[in-house]
Length: 115
Image 1 (cartoon, rainbow, N blue to C red):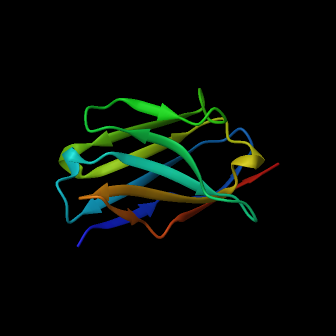
Image 2: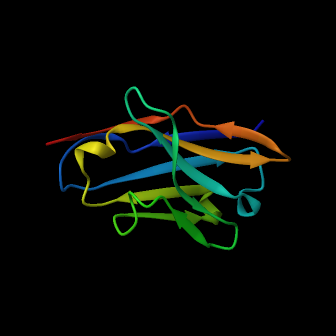
Image 3: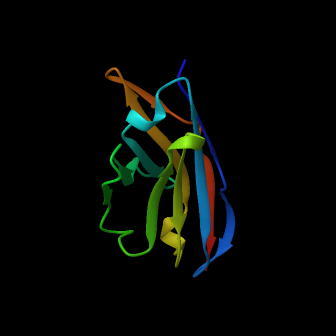
């Protein structure tokens, strides 16, 4: 059973930083394409950042230059470093992967950015 567990969310002032972690179990992590999504209050879930098994990355335009996705394969963990946070970054952040064409989501971690 593939499981994803996020951590690292919290309350931060605008301009601050947070680092989210997503620990993965039940799959060969190094093969996984990993993504971070977020769902702001009252809005749809959106992709924030993604990283391939080879380390190539992709970002939503709204976070380019501020967020960095990375992975530590020996630790089966993917990270999202978030800098220069804005109130509009407030959302529940979810970790996502697919294994054998099946989608897996974490339960999410709340990030709140105060102005």
